[in-house]
Length: 190
Ligand code: ADP
Image 1: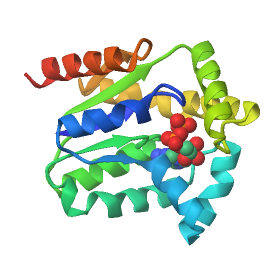
Image 2 (image 1 turned 90 degrees about the vertical axis):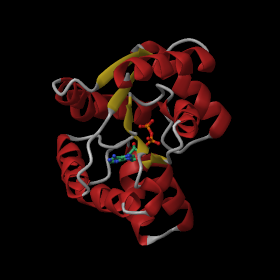
Image 3 (image 1 turned 60 degrees about the vertical axis):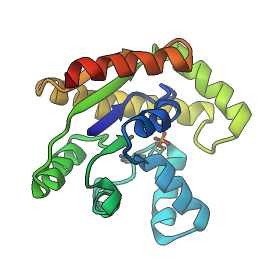
């Protein structure tokens, strides 16, 4: 099972990914989490990523692609994975296709969580108060939403043309949203 989980900042990707990955016995790989861990450890990769993240910009494709290639080459990804937050640009999608082609693998589905922009801003404001994430400040949140709309939203069409996209209403309880995802995937994979 090779899945992508997409959606704007605050859509709930991180919340849904753990249960979804466990359900399918696949690793959940979140590029944002990997970058944050690298920043915390002050590795060269973290130092490169930090400036971009603090501004709400994407880390350059070549840096992100190389990091994902290393992660997907690990043995726990042989039978599948859930990618949360990658790919986010057309160039990353092209690169992912190339990585999969080498392994003669294909994607099974792309789950897109949809939440209206007003609700997203409110959620991220609450998360800022609770978690104090460096990139959850008002100005950076606005930039992250813009960057998503400009660079990542077009991927929904790209994958939609391949018949892979399942758009899921990302509002409601965590359990309700999880059930919607399970149902959409059961139909897709039946
Ligand atoms: P968000 O929900 O805001 O998208 P993430 O935790 O997924 O939060 O990502 C945080 C930051 O990490 C992004 O704003 C970006 O700077 C960087 N990042 C994560 N994934 C990618 C990616 N695929 N390409 C480039 N940058 C990324």
